[in-house]
Image (cartoon, rainbow, N blue to C red; front, side, top):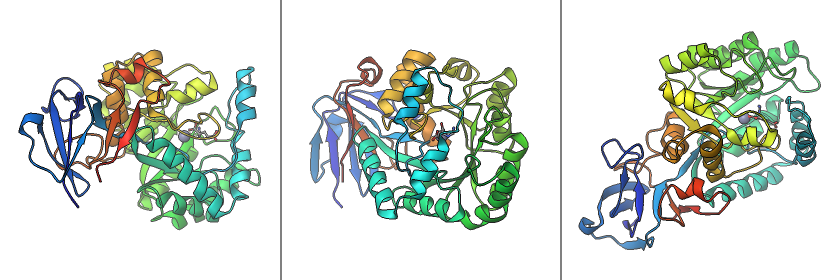
Length: 385
Ligand SMILES: N=CN[C@@H](CCC(=O)O)C(=O)O
Ligand SMILES: [Zn+2]
């Protein structure tokens, strides 16, 4: 592998402590050298070492590739009609998940693999370089294992979400017996993470006690934990996630003071998914309240066919700034370093010596343009291979 010098950088977002100015560690007039998939050198362009290849980005901004730490990319079919019904006033309650389960089960491996490859290409073309992928549209042991196997072909950040909803051929009790007794043991080792849709407000998802049982069994089986919590109404998801040491609790739309206090006192990242509120016409989470309390916030797409069918982290950043009171710098940080923390990763989400050479470039001079020019395809992953 040869050394690649990236130069002509208008603004470099390092996210490195002490590496530059402000929250994003901004540098101007900087250059980066990458080799063997890693960042080897960051410094002033005037002092850059020789390299085998030079990539001049012509004054564009360079930032760490986005880390999309919450997606459901293994699925077939779409639910455009459900979206249209919501825009006409219907509420989202998770009931539509069953139709995606049916379409996914009915698809063969190659069909799902091709759909997944298209979605991965789509997100990379918008600057995402790390992605987490959940199962959860199989809901049998074999179908969940298949989804995890396909996801593992494209990422190491795989999540078992057998406890997504209760499938049509089960009630809560019988399905929980299956999840606890068969699926968790069978899927242990097939995914890094385990997740549960803890949502007492949905008849299809799981209450606090049921979620606790799934999370504790998952932890005992060797999974690290994540939680879907407090999406549709107040509930125990956030506090459960913090108590059990989950890396992240995702959605966080309906929080009370005790939830915010728990997050502030613990290590669990609050992953906000404003594309969901956009596409379900719901109130947005209060990011300002979390940030002001000192909570680490991440942003993700939640790409799925029901609540948010986008792979675009730039859209999510623009929504976070416009609708959730985040500054552009806070939103970019949450989509990179914050999201990396939600995956317990210190090798992505920053551009510092030793980090992975996962760079994104903007057709713009600064990170501000991500929110300032919504809907414009500014970001893409930068090839330094
Ligand atoms: N809320 C639970 N799961 C997904 C939606 C899945 C679906 O509706 O297909 C979410 O994160 O929003
Ligand atoms: Zn989700």
